[in-house]
Length: 136
Image (tube, rainbow, N blue to C red):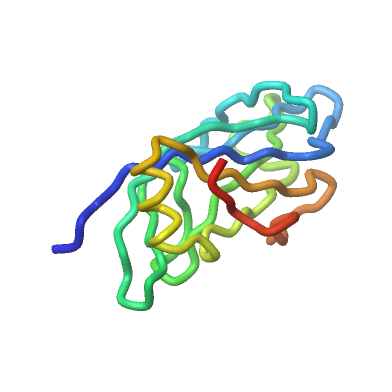
């Protein structure tokens, strides 16, 4: 069995959505939203995920904030209307597939986190900004 590591991630959402009365957060598997914290660039969401090395050198992620299939893992930054539980106003699908096992190992070894940025004005599957997920 492959080693499992727990890695810290920080997702920064630039230009976070601000629909009137809506709640924006990092969506866990139960549909609950974790609030972000204000940073200079927008909102930051911190979480941890479990990672296992795949044969191709990529990392497979599991945990409360990992969604999708083995070949297509992602996180959701979602906007919900409290008046309509379970209905999403908008969801940003943040890909995890660009993260390598070497990045996971380095982040864990150095007690760092992987940080990625997305544009909150987008929805559906988004591209990572800058160089993608980086150790910070």
